[in-house]
Structure formats: structure tokens, C-alpha cells
Image 1 (cartoon, rainbow, N blue to C red):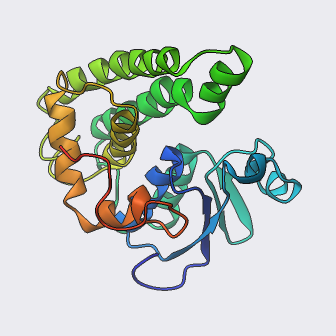
Image 2 (spheres, rainbow, N blue to C red):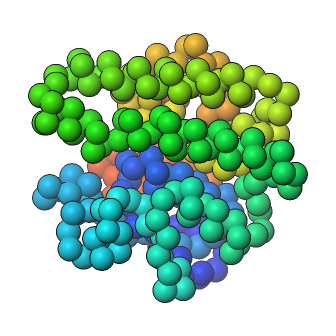
Length: 232
């Protein structure tokens, strides 16, 4: 899954997890060799609930990254760790203002959009609150629209280039593309977000993003380059 050497990095994830997707992109952009171990979030009620995986991450969430006998959880913390330990091909700008801008975009996606629409919440709406698919779709679209409206505004300023910040991919792009993928899965209307769609298309043209795509993972049930999800 990586590109240069055996680094001893192991990523526990699931092909459709947007949080694991972010980390795969970061690993690929930084040319870090890694092995993947699948934690299937659906089969058998979800392998994330198993005793074995709970020993790795007591929260029972993916991703988890193991390196040098240390386990790091939460996608932002993992990506920051990779920046510190593998400083080549940085995914954060050198200037403090730029670093803050990139982190603000990434963290807004990770904290304000994705948690409201993750599998745990959707399952609770369906099974605990007895909501139908139309209501769940409405819920999903509401939070995508709210969050992407803010992101689109930020991306409309002068700091944006080919990518979220300047003309090289950063952590902001690593976080944006998986959220766009999820929005497409749930048939969210993205016409109001032309900058987001342009940047997502630019990112998806890069091999690092293509290799990280859910449909190209070994545990995917939609394996192959051509995803059923439309590309902008």
C-alpha cells in the first residue's frame, strides 16, 4: 500500500470509512509504506466491537494506526503524527497562518460534519429512533449542506489554489475528498459548491487519491477503478 520502504506502519480501517480514507490519502501523498488490516464495520454486527479490536481502540472506531509499538487513534491525530515522524512531503504549510487555515478546514470537516452523519448515528436514527430512509437522507443532507456552505466560503478566498490551500495537496484535501465521497453516496446536491467540486475533481486525478479510494481497497465489495459513485 505504500511506496518506498517498510516502515512498520499498520493501518486498521474499513474501505468505506471516511476517517480511514483520510489517513490512506495522507500515507500515499507522503509515500509512506504501510500495511492494512480490515476491521469490517458490518459483518457479524461489526468487528469493531470485538474484544480483539477493543484492545487496540477501546472506543471501537476506525482508523487506528500502529507504529513502533504505539497506537494512535483519531484521523487528525494520526495525520499530525505522520507529519511529525515522516516530515518529508509535508501536508501542512510552513507558515503559521497557513497551517492554521488548513487545520481549520480539516477539523471543521472532522468535527462538525462527519460525526453527525457517521454509521453509529445513522444506525441509531434507523434502529433506535425508528426513522425511515427518507428521514435519514434528509438528516444527512441537512448537515452536509450546513457544513459544506461554510467550507465553500472559506475555499472562496485568496488562500485557495489548485487545492484547498495553494497548489499542492494538504491535510485539508485529505479530509475534503472523503466527505465529498460520502455526500455523493447519499445523493446530496452539490451544485451549490462549485469550488469544493473543482478541488475534489483535481484531487481525484492524482494517483495518491485514486489508490486511497474506497472502491480500490482490498476489502471493498466494489473493487475496481471505476466506482459507481459519479465523479465531478
